[in-house]
Image (cartoon, rainbow, N blue to C red):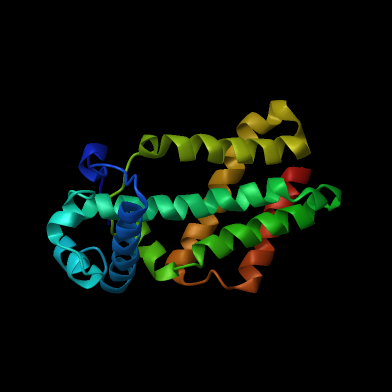
Length: 204
C-alpha cells in the first residue's frame, strides 16, 4: 500500500529549457516509465534508469533528485492524458448535437483509453508509488474540476452541477481505477454499465 511523502521530496530540480535538454529528459522519462512498469516501485532506481538511458547519473540528477521525482513526472504525463480527453470533447463541436448517452460514451471511451496506454504502469502508480497530495497537482485539479463542472452544467444547470460534478468525477474515477487494478478495463460489460450509471445520474 502506498504512503504519502512531502511534495518537496518529489519535485524536479529544474525544467529543461533548450531542445537538447528536453530531448535528454524525454529519453530519461521514457526509460523510467518502462522500468517502473516492468519492475515495480521497490526495484525502481535511478542508477538503472541512467544506465539504460545512456546518460550519466549526474546528468539525471540535474533534473531528478531521486526516484520519487521521476515517478512524479511520469504521473504528470498520465494526468495530462486525462485532460486531453476533455479538451478533445470540448473541441469536437459535432458532439453538441449528439444525445446525452453518446456524449457520455465518448467521455468514458476517452478516459478508459487514457488508462489503457500502459495499464501495468497505472497499477504501479496507484498502489505502489507513494501518494502526492492533490494540491501537488493544482493546475491539473483545477482544470479537471472545470471540465467536469462544464460537462455536468450543460445537462443539469450550474446550480446543481457544483456538487453533482464532484460526485460524477469521483464515481468515474473510482470505477475506472478499480477496474484498472483488477485488469478489467477492456470489459465491454463494465463500460456499458458505467455509461448507463452516468447517463441515468445526469437524467435524474
